[in-house]
Amino acid sequence: MFDSLSNKLESAFKLLKGHGKITEINVAETLKEVRRALLDADVNFKIAKEFTNRVKEKALGQKVLTSLQPGQLMVKIVKDELTELMGSSAAEIELTAKPSIILMSGLQGSGKTTFSGKLALYLKNKKKKKPLLVACDVYRPAAIDQLGVLGEQIDVPVFNDREEKNPVKIAQAAIKQAKQPNNDVVIIDTAGRLAVDEVLMKEISDIHLTVKPEQTLFVVDAMTGQDAVNTAKAFHDTLNFDGVILTKLDGDTRGGAALSIKSVVNKPIKFIGTGEKMEALDVFYPERMADRILGMGDVVSLVERAQEQYDQEQARKISKKIAKNQFGFDDFLSQIQQVQKMGNMKDLMGMIPGAGKMMGDADIDDDSFKHIEAIIGSMTPKERSQRNLLNHSRKNRIAKGSGRDIDEVNQLIKQFGQMSKMMKMMQGGKGKQMMQMLQGFK
Image 1: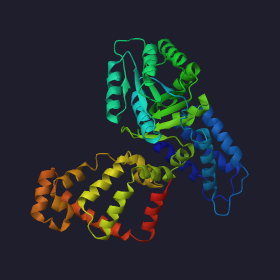
Image 2: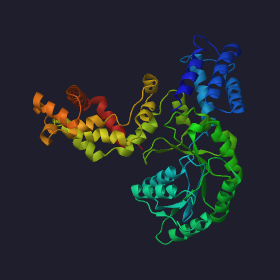
Image 3: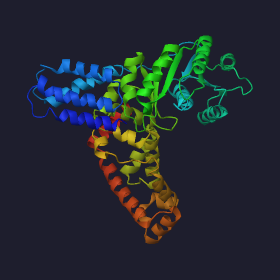
């Protein structure tokens, strides 16, 4: 996420190294590189120019604090301005009506239908709502089928009427039905087009005027850059939507949409999609995103994700097993599965300060743990709990059963032994304090 932009900004800040004071001369070259980095990220030229002008105004004449170098002070100024550019603070979705109606808008292929499912799961699990998904794309049967599959996957009802071709009537019927089984949120997934056109805008406008949604959200593919901003403006002129959703931020996005969209439509980015899993949905925090763009990581979000998957009862059992030297491969596999639930692995690494830079262009495949699962799955229950049973013949059998090489089996067993020792050491001192912090984090 934003790797190219992060690297170019870092290079720009290096130009200030060694200076005792930020002056107009030494800041000019740095800001020239910052502007170039923003333009390469597909940020609108006018926005990039205004951004660097504001940074210059704040930077000139400021004396460097005793503990800081000019480059560090510039990073702080740029971080503050990035945060302001993207919206200052988080803008979560607010729902007060009964039922609350949420209208989804956006172009075809933006991830609108998938996001509708993710939002339903988010509202169900985190806000304790009872959502109803509504399929109003009357042109693509596949979109209706997709919403049905997603609804089944997350155990949320889906309303559709394949015979009715008027999306306004479908939406009205869904809202009427929602009042009967007490669904308190209605999420309407609308049709999209490959580009903005008159038919699309009239249809979405008719639905909007008829159902009067409490929230109208615009879903946009973050990888489309400046085109996303132009599309957002066209939709906003018609709908005056309440917020933006950026999808596919786990992909090779340059960042232009995230950095420009708030300035153009003056509406907040409310959520970001960070993966294919239904749980891969995050509230957008401008300050945290600014930290990540500048390579500072996002430890708060990382801890929040860990907290969501953290089972205190299971952790206590694991802790006792480690203390008694009874931590086995089944426990190890359980811990891996909990980490996987936290989201895309490369995204998680990007939240650790400095880790994203160390990784560079290295690709972390979410399936990279599959071979570990296969090897452990080929062990007998006794072997999984008693590592000392794993002699050469047993290892050969496990290798054949898992379809992996014997060296991989040996490597896993060795790494497991090293990890078990480390976890035992973590039982006291700072390791214990860290676990207590995680349990008490809110």
